[in-house]
Image (cartoon, rainbow, N blue to C red):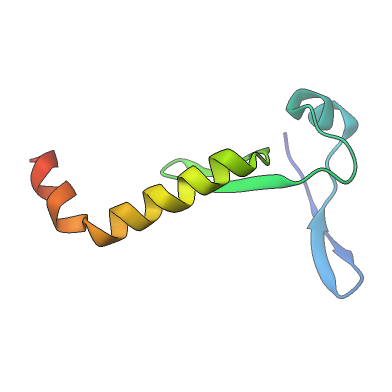
Length: 73
């Protein structure tokens, strides 16, 4: 699905078609979680538990980078 970036006041935004909102099980006013993956950007419905787990995982990966690198070898 191709989306266009548009001006919204002094900001920029993307308008999500109602079909996409239905597939994501989202409605106006809901929050999205944006994840950067090796394949690009992933949008999902915001889940506070998942968001906190991702923050912890990123912190562990930063702090224990050398250990994780050794384990991967």
